[in-house]
Image (tube, rainbow, N blue to C red; front, side):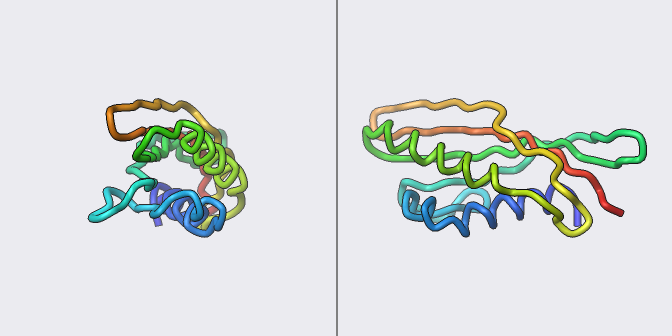
Length: 131
């Protein structure tokens, strides 16, 4: 399995298995949802490059997440983003032939229009190939 798929799968599984997060959003979607009622969270397509060190073959990925929330509740946006950070911060260990060596928040953009909030959050993930 490619590193991109392994990392994306681990992120998606962690978000979908967190009961507290699932109490805050209606759906955690793998890509653009066909049908979703806000608030929903989209796990986007990662962008990656090679990374490594002597004797280590690795991958550096930027994993995007997009949160959509209708209404005027910025406190709820903040609460959901904080929970996401906790959930992703707990991911560690082996993913088959890959191991996550670091996962950290990189950047975010929060926008508001008349009817909804949108928060785009990127996490930087580094993974090393075990074989």
